[in-house]
Image: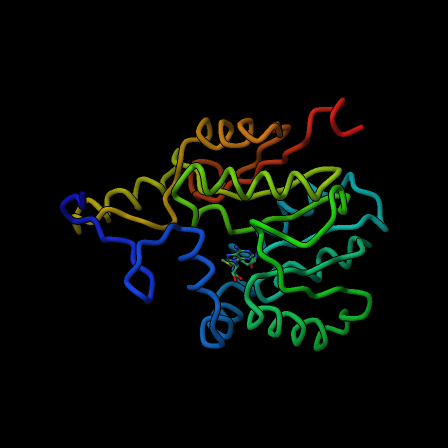
Length: 237
Ligand SMILES: C[S@@+](CC[C@H](N)C(=O)[O-])C[C@H]1O[C@@H](n2cnc3c(N)ncnc32)[C@H](O)[C@@H]1O
């Protein structure tokens, strides 16, 4: 039953949908791709994310095969290319990928980069295809643990090394403001919901992966955190 103030999650045809479908649909248009391309590029948030990603991937040798999924408009591609990786940019939205390709061409870094339309829940990549995966700004759109776990399982299947994944953590000022805003508006949020770190760790462990490192983009201030995931040694061998 629908609770007071809670929006029913319906797709365009009026059917109930989950956050996986909603997130896929939301970004899958030319307008949202163009808007997203302008939204974060060059901001302080963007610079902080670059810093975290650089630190978390610095142990990976040049030449490693890295999947950036979802790539969005290719915001993180210049960094991955600069670090010497062989990069695949993948996203469920062809519009986002088109922006990413255009961006890569204007930066002169498109050569050697693969661009693919892929769904993070069911990719066409073979098992252990990548040395590392970067999954930036996707999981905060997934409110159901089972959706997060399905996606983590697929990332774990196609990666033989580390998976760097971001999520929104509930122990910070940003999360407090988020809760206050929703409380004032008597709204039950359905997107970008910060979760306890313990909850994210449980999701990771439920898929047979483990968290080996975490990093906040701005400790106690910003919601965005990174976790580095790995398969236990014996299984990865
Ligand atoms: C907030 S953007 C983040 C993009 C990029 N990682 C960044 O940090 O700029 C979310 C992206 O996820 C993509 N997306 C949504 N659902 C997806 C799915 N199931 N598989 C692959 N990509 C998906 C959207 O098309 C969109 O480009």
